[in-house]
Image (cartoon, rainbow, N blue to C red):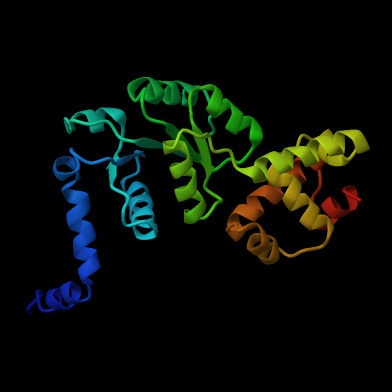
Length: 243
């Protein structure tokens, strides 16, 4: 049996733009030395290449280099430093033990370039901690690629990007302190407050996920956390306790 007959079909299914992108990411250590580029640091190879591809599609003028660590970037012996660094933490929080050290190390290594943290958390406390450690911007993974691209542009221009949604959510928390709401008493995160309010209004998980631009599985995680904090056994009990 000829096991190679399917190979041409697989190759034929790739578009010219795919070959151009594959060539681009494999040559990054050489032809980008003389150009401005953005460095993505993420130990997960697939995730960093997906982010690189998404940014390149959104803005083809972006030159992007990816690496698993600062050490890996150093081994490429690139002559120029990046114009911005995206330091990806994913599910880890900037408040965790060694996270701040990693942000400081990146800021120290790339003194002339802004370090932008990307993480799942959109809690204002985590964001401010990242900035305190040396980040010049913070992009929660809940935003879309256009917002991420604009945040990078702002940091490269000398600004500091903090998502407005996190600030507004914290404003709601402060308001709840004045009114004596259950939200403040149970130390909800800004995102949990949004989910809890949606539960109080009787919205289904799919609707909450759609309105908040989240995966339904992420909404379920928030609901479990809310139930734990309220000592509730189901969403009906959650809604009752939040009235």
